[in-house]
Image 1: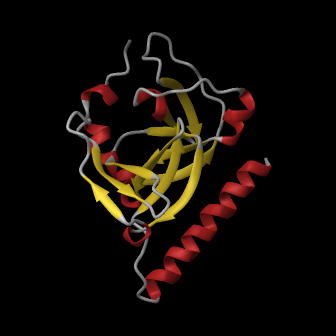
Image 2: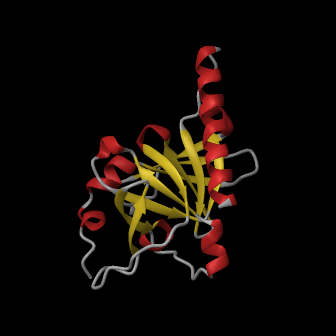
Image 3: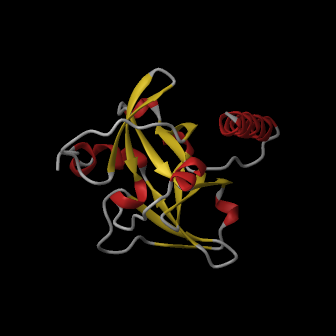
Length: 175
């Protein structure tokens, strides 16, 4: 229960900060930074939905290993995708590790009832948080955007959730 209250508090603070920044004419963050499978990802805020604490997921038989099942997220049934596993670098998670993870729902405008399992939320990022940008690798999936490099040299892969939600691999969960 404390995790849910902490997430609600985080979401409230983020919303307040975004609203204050908009009213003051400050550049607003473009991405939600997350970690999944030990790698950093940037998810466009305009394509991201609500953040939920890990909740029980009802497994679905005969699906791909990265499709964890169905969860009830505030009255909406959503398919839960292990982001790291889908991208090919999944890790085994213990129950305590799952309890620390979050589910990030895709924005309702994408018209896909799905949520991504991420290991950690790393906060909001804007373009000013990065010192360099590189094109995605040549063999990258179509939903990979540029790679952004922060002052510490950490690489953050931008993921275009709208493109991801339209790919046949994401939509075809059958094993």
